Length: 310
Image (cartoon, rainbow, N blue to C red; front, side, top):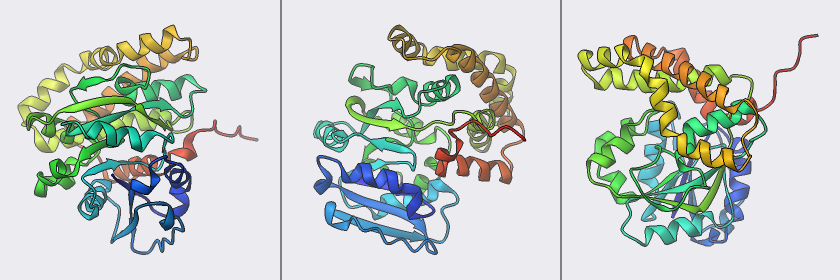
């Protein structure tokens, strides 16, 4: 299996590399690191993996194009799209590879919250990954998100020139693969923990997550369809919350959700909807795209509460 990770420098993915090095199937992994040509990466873990490859690109902006470069450089039949803030448990890779021995085009791992100490962190996790929480049962599913997911490499390469755009901050890839008849499976035995914005920047990231989806759809959809969604936007928070009702109930019964998670979910759904509507109407500005990329690359910076002013 090839693991593709985009980064700006080696320090950003040190913790991820530590977790990959500790995999029970580390010797079956090809790690593909995509970075700017001026990053001067010199990782020292080559001997622990089947292969370690550095793919230099002029820029990692946008991240979708950088991820596509990593996929094209990968050589294993299965590709996992990792992140700088997602940390696999030791049996993760082995479980994904076992699942891909079956005729699944897509295998989604079981995700957990790496920083579950606050309501907003838990709300962010549930909105982004609650449908694939590790507590849920294994089985065939409609699909996953774009990253923190493994794919048959041939399925991705079949997209040809559409691959770069499909790997953007939106839902084009899972929709496209579903329309092509790709089969997806949820494998909770492949466990990976995901860091979520907990305090500083939480509202901004929730807004941007909706803005990027709406902006991408603005480029793809007709004006009439976008206006229909804008008019129906008061219903969007309810739709968002209904999609994660099962994991909320499961985790709530286990007593692992902090007090205030449900109000944070409601607030997050409303803020995300506002961003989505702005995206439908005017699209995302360049500064918004840069901010979102910083959250994606450096989410670990946004865990602690801001320091009080003196």
